[in-house]
Length: 95
Image (tube, rainbow, N blue to C red; front, side):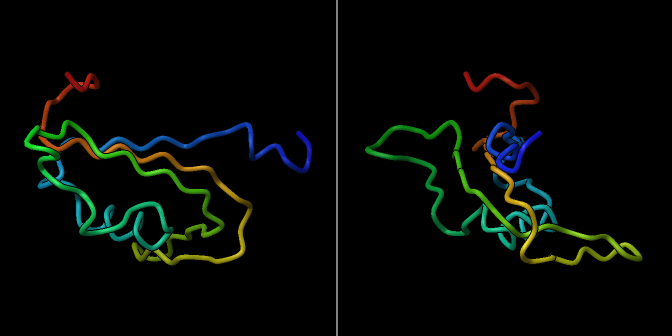
């Protein structure tokens, strides 16, 4: 592993259903810069949306202390990919 080893790793998070995402999970992803509230739409050009994909390289880490999540700035970069499925499908495929 070299200095730029972080470029070889992508952390993927999949959430099953936009209406049912855990509020703490949503807040953590937003705090890290991975998720932006208000961008996702149910339809585009009259067609139903299957999933929303967010991509971001964050330098915000997290620390858990006494069941409280604290965001920690200036950490090693992490490439994040967040897939927020529009509806609950209970499977990993998006069809």
